[in-house]
Length: 188
Length: 188
DNA sequence: GACAACATGTAAGGCGTTACATGATTCG
DNA sequence: CGAATCATGTAACGCCTTACATGTTGTC
Image (cartoon, rainbow over all chains, first blue to last red; front, side, top):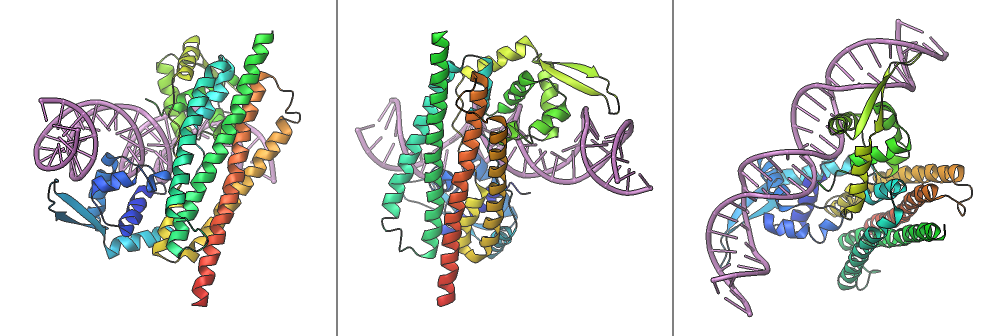
């Protein structure tokens, strides 16, 4: 029962602004998705359950020039569920890093084969860092004077930025080790 | 088919040293578990499948003063499966941080309620950093002259260390924001 | 006699991914 | 006419966690 942060991530997003399943899916590709990902299939499934539990209400909205949509909003019950969860402890997340498994596995094959893969990861993390920094410059031009809500959003984004910076530095270390190993093999 | 790093983490661990399901579970609480976690239930289930696929062999070993155990070791086929996987790309992992969901959610309740929770996380990450640093001092007293295999193990550990340092610094930022918000409420 | 460590599993239920499926509207 | 975007779902399958279940041996 401790891993189900998806419900609560959806509650937070719908409290910030009610929306359709489709809109939620797009938010999980951007802002919220920076620290909790979800696909539209997951979202539709969980929305249905949350509606059954009385946490959210659905209102059908006809649109011009677009298909109708179901706009979801949080009920007082849903809000209470979020507040209860905020008071419960969550487990500190452990790392789940497939690349680290590969690096350890490289000892049993040719480590140089991994260089391309690590460079690919480096490029992906570099792109994500750029995205975060662009978002920070756009949404928080003056980070010293933020209201409470904005300060909380900003500090989460700051975590993403520092995570990507740290990861880039680590991948550079990994690449240095792999290049050193390759050079050593060439000598002998 | 891209998320199944558990099989390969087990192959790596069994290549380093054959062992029982129970022993593997303990390794996943320590060294390998620093970057890929698994419970004994998962491990027994996957071991059975891997045995069916011919990736590992099982040998029953009677012990003195302890229950018998099944020692698993990697077959040539299993080793080939690992080598094939090392050549396939894996997706860069996205963050899955429940605490970040809570921080965003704190805007809709009393942010000061979160201070205790964040401090608990800070203590857990601080303890893990100490553990990593102790392991580094013990296993890598002279990190400049390592053979290839040890260099790869060390650089993965270095990643864990930097991740924990980064996380501690971020949690201090989060605490600063939460304290500032609480002080602001006290004034008004 | 109780407890910890060693050792191996099953079952239930929710999470997550991939593939499949449908249909409207807008823009080029 | 085709592609992209908006919009909502179902189905299948495997992953992961939690709880349950059993039994041995050694130590206090």
